[in-house]
View 1 (cartoon, protein in one colour):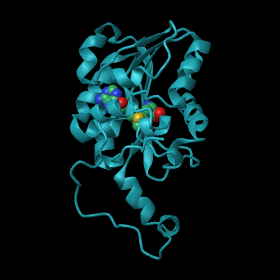
View 2 (tube, helix red, strand yellow; view 1 turned 30 degrees about the vertical axis):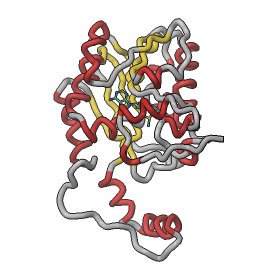
View 3 (tube, protein in one colour; view 1 turned 30 degrees about the horizontal axis):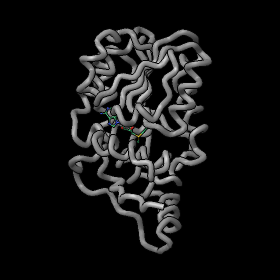
View 4 (cartoon, protein in one colour; view 1 turned 135 degrees about the vertical axis):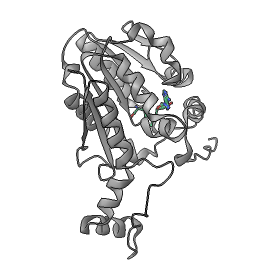
Length: 251
Ligand SMILES: C[S@@+](CC[C@H](N)C(=O)[O-])C[C@H]1O[C@@H](n2cnc3c(N)ncnc32)[C@H](O)[C@@H]1O
């Protein structure tokens, strides 16, 4: 058995994900940047939550776009959902990641880094009924322009369209939790020590997603004529105490 490579979990980007995707020493969770314990057994809950937040997925014959589908059980379940509902499903991720997914005739793979590749999606402008982008935004934020990312999604979204930019780590939410009795107890149990959790530093932290970034995205989407909301994750998800979802709906 060959040794697994070291994975710098907190330093992943589009290019590194592409390398991980083709490394068959890795589990399907490791290929998408998660230790197995963070995802194994949670996928049905995640897909059910995505479907509940995007009720139009339950309609038939729509155009659906998944930005950054990865290659774990989540995209496989979403592909099956789209098969059942007779949707056309566009997938945008690296060629290496997309190669891990099947090629049924209703799936259109568009390899590329979003939003830089958005020019190649011009036929979808104003024509996508449902956009799914789950556990991807923080990788874009680390090196890209979050407003350009949101603007391109808003350009693609059809009238009545729904978009979930989900599983976003929010440092402000994490500090709020750590300041609570529940957060202190959680931290003691997690670290198996009596140390107190970290406190919120003064001022914004460069490179970190916090309330101001997420509220900024809400305002950006609303300025583009869409409704936008920050919504919680089900408490059963392993990072629900520090992550949240951005829901966008075009009237
Ligand atoms: C943490 S995984 C999430 C995968 C899947 N959405 C899920 O939740 O199971 C992040 C995925 O986003 C892809 N990705 C990262 N940045 C991207 C970008 N700018 N455009 C398209 N895909 C991107 C990665 O290649 C990887 O497949």
